[in-house]
Amino acid sequence: MQHLSAVQPLADADLWKQVQEGDSAAFDALVLRFYRMLFHYGSKFSDDEEFVKDCLQDLFVDVWQRRERLSSTQFVRQYLLKALRHRIFQETRRPLTRLIERSFSVEGYAFRIEFSVEDDLILAEATQEQVARLNRALLRLSPRQREAIYLKFYQNLSTDELTAVMGLQEQSLRNLLHEAILALRKQMLLSVLVALAGG
Image (cartoon, rainbow, N blue to C red):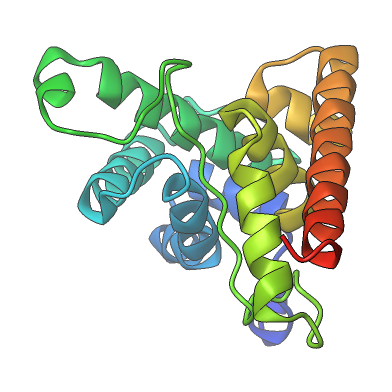
């Protein structure tokens, strides 16, 4: 009889459980499933790809080494996002790491989002100018606002997942998203008005 996971992929929680039980094939599948998404998220905190890869490697090594002590979770993606975020912040606070130039702002980090016309979040008919306006508007948001926008609309995290990953209360998160969306609308409207005015 063929194993069910060979026919259809395991749910994240089931995969996690198998990793906890020491299944190295499940661990490999976990890494393959989440590495790209986590790398993309980590690269929003730092331009240094090697730094992000090192943090990811450390994260996955830690998961494997601590597998028997990890708690069960239905929210594997949320757990890994939060763990990577924590590891990146932890690594940037180390004295030796601080000597190496990182792109972190006064708030502690500079979360960057930059869309290109090819991104699936931008409609196919979007123009280069619309993309440029969006990028300029995103740069005017605080790093926390950019991170919340990215996680909510690019990673499709629920409110509960967002509060856990970002370490915010639900109302604080809602306020942060609301202010970010209002700021984006205002900036996009101002860009359009300036463009229409010819200036």
